[in-house]
Length: 263
Ligand SMILES: NC(=O)c1ccc[n+]([C@@H]2O[C@H](COP(=O)([O-])OP(=O)(O)OC[C@H]3O[C@@H](n4cnc5c(N)ncnc54)[C@H](O)[C@@H]3O)[C@@H](O)[C@H]2O)c1
Figure 1 (cartoon, rainbow, N blue to C red):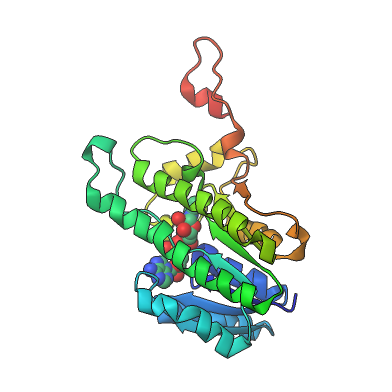
Figure 2: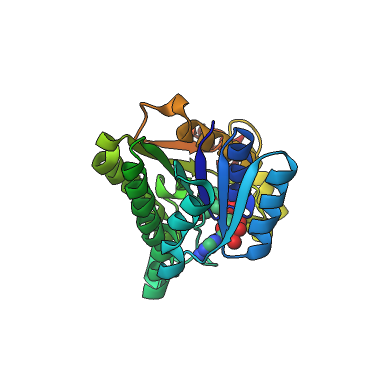
């Protein structure tokens, strides 16, 4: 591939898989994470496979640390061609709208939208200055595309992130900078492993058309498509990667129990 990539939140889970897939495809990868041990472990793994990577410890919630990411990548590798925005997520706990607090909304919008906007603009401006275009890919969620009860703040934030990619696509497209989103379904990552029960895991497996929940590598492959020249005429788009979980219409035969619509 011969490109340089930043993976923001690249030290674990989906971000780790993206760092490895991009490096395996030949990109030099800046693995950014707030946890040094995570960024360093992934960097060591890339190096052990014969690839190129650097670890950068930065908390994306800190504007000064965020502002240092693009310059540090240029110092290390000479350019920024790809940015993947991975870190995000919800606050622990699902709450009905009437019980959600302003701090819940502030948290998830900061966690999923604000820094994505700041880092994406910094990277896109650098790509414009380089003159050869680039690709920005952000990790959304099926929660930002479809509704779910008790989940409003996270869903609204991911919907905003997906919309943000469209705005970036329009404002930077004439400079050859593309922006797209990948929206995962239920993915087995360390972050969610402790949060879901074996019963929920079994239900997740039943819910997909493919009969299993996703892996981080399933998401990384879709990111590689958007990041690469295979997607050179694709921008402002969002791809759901959920094993077909959300294509199902819950049609019930008369008298059937709701669980039968999942079989
Ligand atoms: N796991 C799923 O089922 C799932 C489903 C849909 C969407 N997603 C989205 O995918 C993304 C990754 O999910 P994951 O389960 O791999 O999460 P994760 O919690 O493992 O996060 C990935 C990495 O981001 C880092 N990170 C988090 N906040 C950071 C910050 N402020 N600054 C720097 N680094 C930070 C973490 O240290 C971690 O190494 C998130 O945006 C999440 O919302 C996940």
